[in-house]
Length: 205
Figure 1: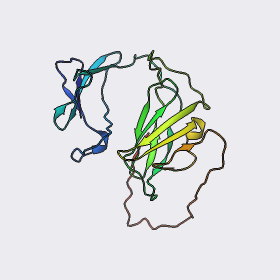
Figure 2: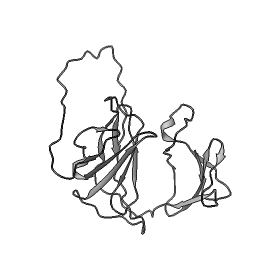
Figure 3: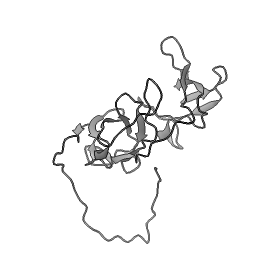
Figure 4: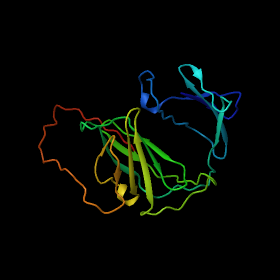
């Protein structure tokens, strides 16, 4: 978990790993925590807590980051999306995905219950200037998809990643930049009686 705030001596807010849900914290190597209700153009300080201990790095236990300016406009690009599966074709739930476009900050998402993956492209900012970067449909992107034990690297373009041309099998690497023939499967039409079934809907964007 993280504790954070605007005053390094008063870190009064907490953020836990997004994948824990309502259950107790789980031991993981990689974590994803969102800091919410942040003000623009403001420096926030945070500490990383693991096993009830504060983590130190480079001789300090307090880190900081500055939020973007209020007038930075979000892009009109629709999100990157696709599906992630384990090698046994079961959905890879709670898998992390990190998109990098050139010299910009990474955009991060986590896969849902059925392995679906969706990563918004709302703010694509240069890591040096914190200013928006103009991107195009044919710009190359790198997508790292990983959990604690397996990793895939996907090279593609923005236009060929909505959706990704095929499900990603965790542990395999892919390149969708060149126009290549891609294996695909299609479900046969089936009629299902839903009268006695409950459907869980999760809005991800």
